[in-house]
Amino acid sequence: MFGFIERVVIPTLVIFVLVGGIAGALLGAALVWRSTAALRFVARMNRWVSTREALRALDAPRTLHAGSRGLRRWLGVFLVFAGAFATAFLLARLDIQRGGYVPGVDLERWLVSGVLLETAKWVLVLGSAFACVVGVLMVFFPAQLAEFERRLDRWYLAHGSSGEETTITPGMIMPFEPRVEANPRGAGAVIAVASLAVAAAMAILLFGKLS
Image (cartoon, rainbow, N blue to C red):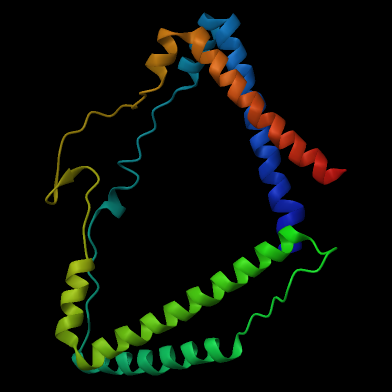
């Protein structure tokens, strides 16, 4: 898995950022020497696509019925035993022995693999322990669990408040472009220099790894 990430994922991300840096440098150069044409190009590329209608079905609250009290109690019992078993098993059996660093071993792989494995282990342990706690609440403290759920449940409506939609004028918010239009040459120089620095760093990483 780590070999796939090292050979495929990381070089792909580096190439993606390298291409973005080159594109940013070209845009910055165009803003410096061909400001009017560059601003017209940016204006043509801007498009407003509203997702309000497409996401309307997702913008409605859904309530999952809790079911009978007996069913919740049996589910709580299952969560208690399953969570306790998984927590104990992970702590007792999933022992990540990384050992000390040995010269000649890839230091980056040694560090990253250890961090990823330890992180995955403790995420699983904490998730199992939390499931056990929820099961205890379902069995012995249903009122406290209901209050806990009430505090966690929040409904956020993207187009209004208090369950009522408000009229919002569709449009793009572009706080950066007016500043570029006010001083295209200066903004272009900053964009070009920053993009070239990013592209150079990515090129060094890419060709250093390939060589």
